[in-house]
Length: 101
Image (cartoon, rainbow, N blue to C red; front, side, top):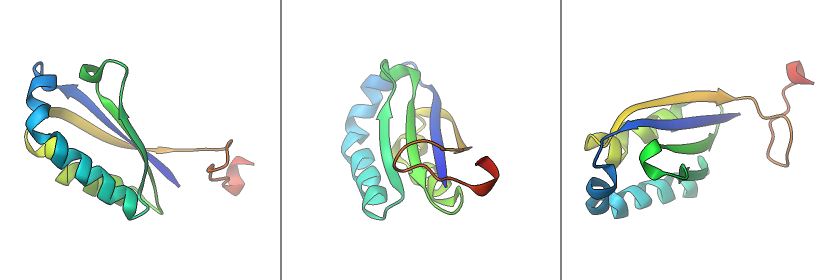
């Protein structure tokens, strides 16, 4: 199954405040990718608008644990985060659940 982690309500000076934490943030993301949890991640076109991270797993736990330990979250740059199940049905990585066919 797929789960989207949304970062929202970033602090007004987000772009400035993220710089000292960026290496930690990228290491955190790369570790989640190496574990096979994180599929894709990135900021929206205007980074101050937030970010979206795509996780895969049996449940939302990996995405939630990622957010709870994320340098940007722990240091108050992200005002709100949310994990939502994403019902993927088309594409090579889609999870075709019988109830969706």
